[in-house]
Length: 169
Image (cartoon, rainbow, N blue to C red; front, side, top):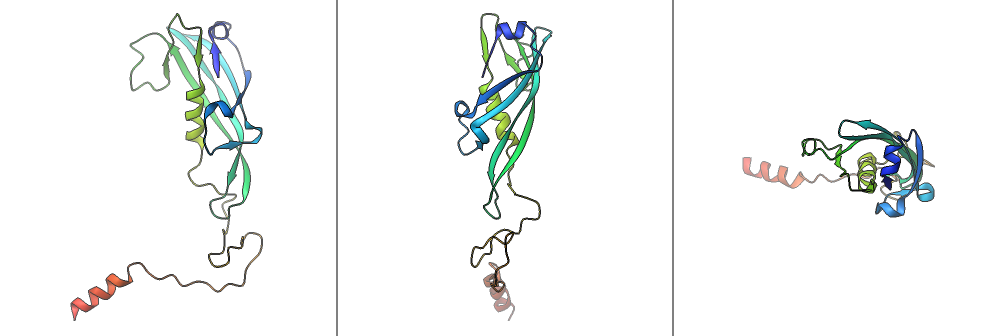
């Protein structure tokens, strides 16, 4: 997504941008209609511009427990300073981006890409009480109960306990 200098100078306010996710290279992350909504406002800031707003979309997820597809709305905020002041450009100011006077636009695609990755949950659950799949027959236990007997799990440490007992004798 390119934000042109003319937009920055006009001080856009709550302008809606629809961003195609195809251009963001999101790999396995999918969105409904492959569209992100981004609402941005621009203000003058010392030595540059302040760009702030929100980014959101409906993500298509697959539950880690039951493998069911579900949709979830995720939203993130954007708060950036665009400047040519080299004193502000250092490793500590992650929200400060270089914009020289000669540049006609700034590409926000890498920033939007990173914001989406940050918002993506580590564990995807269709709901907090998801029962998952039966480890024996694979039936989704949220939809119906199976008649499988609970499977006894052999301890991975059992052989070490046997060694300990043999050494004590």
